[in-house]
Length: 581
Image 1 (cartoon, rainbow, N blue to C red):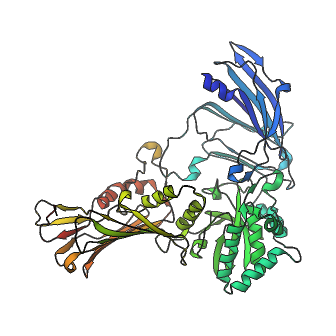
Image 2: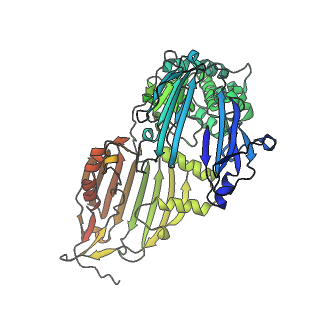
Image 3: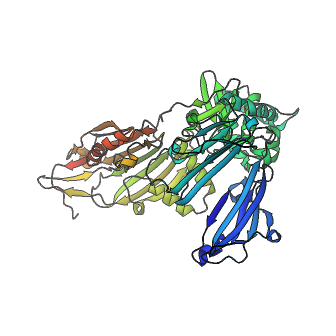
């Protein structure tokens, strides 16, 4: 690694005046090749070995992450504003207990760089395969005494234009070197480690815990939920990436004794419980960072950074991730954490998970205006916010960690459609309903807007339009963006149910609300309005049906989406209202 940087002011001088090089002592050897100052055509050697210190710096303890990294620190003597500081160092990767060496380099940078280069030297006896993003140009491989050498150089690098809804695979420009010939070989490398770690000792406390769950829950579905809740709620998450710990899992007994574990530890703990409960399950490797497009990469362990559980009851499949929190329903467990997963089974292959549609709205606002005793001033209302599925579990995580209760209530209010935050009076919360939902109740009083309309005898009240309004800034009109697909939030389903209880049984009112029922831009948008028994009810739905949209369809959707957003729904009074009452 080599970089050159020039401080242009005092802030820049302060920022770069101490050279800091991260070093994982268990996995690499580090050589500090040079620290130089270029000034006025001269090169000054600033590598004073007496000034070097190696410190252990756990910078992410607040995130429950133990990295085991050291930091090599060197204060640069004599550095001045306008100098060019040139730092170079070399890492040499050790094989580790797996005996495999591989590399992934991302040539994507967040800032403009004058010159960006990567040089890789790979021993011939590694038997590695290369895979290089088609956007990169490389020199022909040179055969040296150390092995095959390749250089990748980009001049005047500029980061890609910032765009909305860009799939993650377009944000990486990878160079891969992998010794693995297949995904099955990757799985075979780690499967024995998990097979061993999930086994419990005689008289294990984990076995006793599983027996307790079995006694309390006879249905295997309920046992799965109880085991997962134990792993999520009673075992603290601590990422352990010390030495080869990023591959070797803690034993299930160890995890329960210490009451903490990383994704591997929580997985082995869950597997041990499920084994004792008679539920077939296996660990699945996954990639959080490179999930989108993983199926287009070389089989590689270096791309995988997560593991969780796939469990089976008859023909049903469920995905249990101990690092999540707050999941309460089987419905949530039908969708895996990642799009791609590699089961640690014999003859394994990379699996692409099918899209699983939400079966109920993930976020719903139920709003009831009681206008029976007056439709204009101080109309009382009740508003209920209902969160389901992953939206509910994410809110449980947030609510469990937030320290400012007023801020939390304000965040709830932001999610309620059709009422200003100032009008909402918080009543109560039900974070753990039996059906797995998270429910928040509000009430209040406010004035309703019944506006007169030119050419009409009466006035009209507009139903909330926010659910079906989508001003999608797809940003796919220029040449550079015309081929980039659009990534969507999936699964997602928002619903608003708005009711107005009208005076006189609703006989003095009618409905002006054309129905909406369109599937556009990978989304189904609908609205229906009824008037019956003195109650006007509008039900609006915004339901995602796909996770990605081709750019041509995105461009074509703009005008129809604009039309839907402007297609309002009204309650109309048959006679003029006295708005000053």
